[in-house]
Image 1 (cartoon, rainbow, N blue to C red):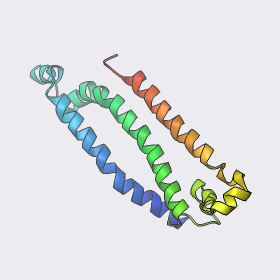
Image 2 (cartoon, rainbow, N blue to C red; image 1 turned 135 degrees about the vertical axis):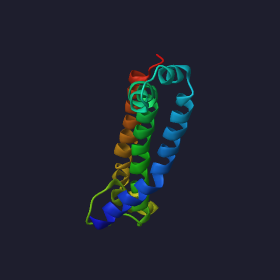
Image 3 (cartoon, helix red, strand yellow; image 1 turned 60 degrees about the horizontal axis):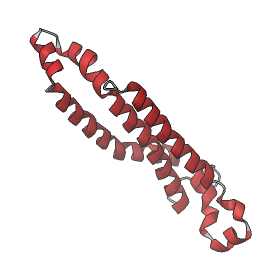
Length: 142
């Protein structure tokens, strides 16, 4: 359990910077748009401009980034466990289940050892499609 929380913490610390940079750049670009400048000239407070104009404008980008980050975290944990750097065999994860697949002779004799690959692919694709759908639904320019 400690290893799991350690992996989660490390992957989270490594990946939040990309999302923060994307959000900051998007907010800085939207801040210069005509509708934000007009709201500022009309006397709107910064909190109102952020809540009413900026937040809805980049929410679709934020949703897409977050739903693409989840599969990368799943793949990161799976890869670390597969290589033996993550979770250990008493705990079950897709990487631990795939550890046996490192031996090509075992895969030849027992091909069902590769079945944990199918849920990994399905979950990653499901999150990607879900993120695309949410992004399209929240897109203000549609």
